[in-house]
Length: 201
Image 1 (spheres, rainbow, N blue to C red):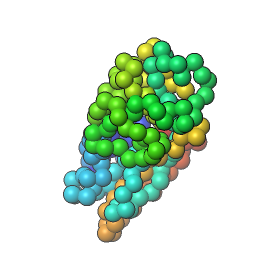
Image 2: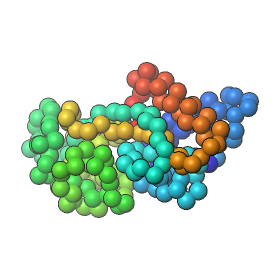
Image 3: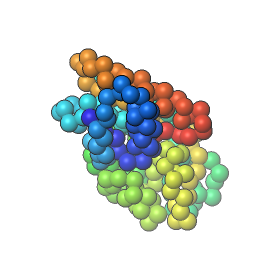
Image 4: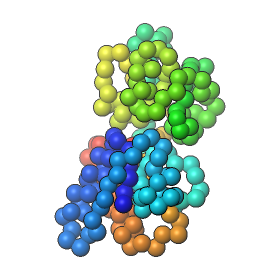
């Protein structure tokens, strides 16, 4: 049982699934598309054997880094910062940031010092709407920006923001050869994806 949230994580999962189906001795993958922040808990309570998740900061699960990618600032085009070509995390420090539910990690914020005092959001669709309304600015992975080009949201590079990381997660006490095989395959697919110029998140 494998889980991931919608977006590039599930796109990577599709590639893993295709590779498994091409191997006659590979185990069947049962895929569950889960919501924001649910992946680690699903592994912990046994609803999933392995997950593809973003920016996990816990220490109770084994992890394998699959991919990293830069972030860009998402802001309304009317914002004064949108007039600049490149921004820094210091430029955003006093800007309202979305409050994720469940709470985001520092990696999702891109800067642990940044106050989190904007509207509550539960997914990236809500995130982009509050940005478009001028209620918050956000640091998002470049792949998300590329998939969500819209006239009411501007994206600007933020080179000093913490990179966005995608990991495989599984229980520390797992001895399953199928989980090990999945993690190896996930790493290979993520490497192939990066080498083809496709960002993973």
